[in-house]
Length: 439
Ligand code: S3P
Image 1 (cartoon, rainbow, N blue to C red):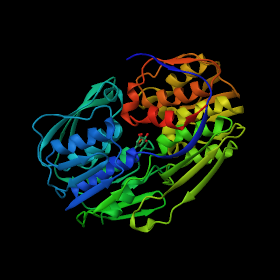
Image 2 (cartoon, helix red, strand yellow):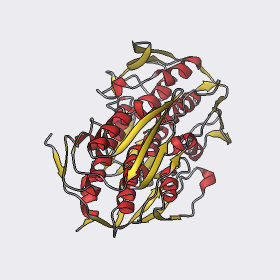
Image 3 (cartoon, rainbow, N blue to C red):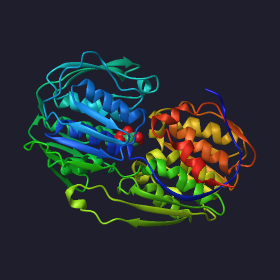
Image 4 (cartoon, rainbow, N blue to C red):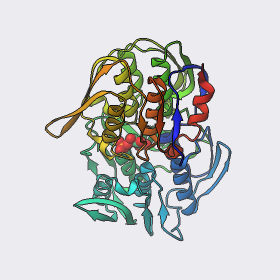
C-alpha cells in the first residue's frame, strides 16, 4: 500500500450519519441467526469485521441476504446451526471469534476456527476458561502458557454457572450468555466493572429471560428467541469519536453526528471530552429502552480550547476503543492528562500503547507509561501542539484513524505507511472525512 499523505489543519463542518455500530451489528446477526423467523437489519455497517461474522454464520447454514446496508437473516432457532464444510475464518475480528465460541460451545458438532495475522496474537483463555467450566470441549494453540487461535471446539451439553470474569470484557460476558442460551440451568455473570451491555439489551429485544441487577446478569434459558422483525443499528460512537475530536480541536469547526448509539457503556468519550471543556450537545431520542432498544441521539461538537483530565480505571471499559484518539486529544490540550489502568490496550488489534506512544513521540508529544503494581498508566503532558511526522498504522484501524486526525491537527505534513487496515471497521472513513473537511 502506498503511504498516505496528510496536510495539516482544516476546519470540520457539517452533518453526518455513520454506519451502524460494530458491536451491535455482530450481536444483531448472531441473535437473528439463533432466533425463529426472519429479521431485517437496517444501517448495517459493511466492513471486514461484520462480514467475518456474517460469513461465519452463512458457513454454519444460516441464510443471509445483503443489499447495500440492509441485511435479511432467516433464523435457524437455537440448535439449528449445522457443521461447516471447512474451518471458519474469523479474520481479525476478536468479537467474531469470541462470540462464536459461545455459540459453538452449544452446537452438536466439532468445528475449527482460524484467525488472521493480528487476531492470532490475541489472548483467548479469557473466554475458553469459562466456556470449559460450562462444559465445552475447547482446544487452542498454546504458546508460553497462553491460549491463541486456531481453536477447535466440540460443542455439547452445557450447564449454567456463576462466574466473575477476571478481566472486564464484554466479549467474554457475551460468549457466556450465548452459550448460556443452550445450557441447563441459569448462567450468572458478576462483573467487577460494567462493560457494554449490547448483548443483554438485544437478548431482551429477542424475548430472552434475562435480568440485570447492577453488575450481576442472569440468563434463564427457558425461552426461545423470537425475532423482533426489524432492528435499526444506530451509528457507531467509536467511529464518531474521530470526528468529535477533530471538531473539538480544529478552530472554527462544528459537526453534527446524527442517530448515533448512546449506550451508557459506550459514552465515556463524551464524558471525558466534556471534562476537557469540549463544547458538546447531546440530544437523546425517545425510545422504549425497557424493551431492549439501544439508546440513540445526535451529538453536536464545536471547537474550543481543551484542558487536561484524569481518566480513572473505572471509566476504561466505557471508552476502551477510544483511548488511542483520547491520547491524541490529550497531546493537543493544555496540561497533564493521566489515563489509569490502560493495560488492556496491549492486547487489542495491535499493542495500542506501543503504537500510539511511538507515533505521538515522533510528532513531538511528551507521553510516557508508568507502572503501579500490575497497572499501566499513560501520562501525557499536553503542549497544545503536534508536528507532522512519518507515522505507522501498525496494521491497526484505530491507530491509523487516530493518527490521521493527529496529522490534520499538526503543524506541517505527515505521512502514514498503510491505511488499508481502516477497512476493518470503517471503509468510508476517508471519504466521510473529506466531505466534512473545509478549507
Ligand atoms: C467489544 C468489546 C471490547 C472492545 C471491542 C468490541 C464487543 O473488547 O474493545 O472492540 O463488541 O464486545 P473486550 O470485550 O475485550 O473488552
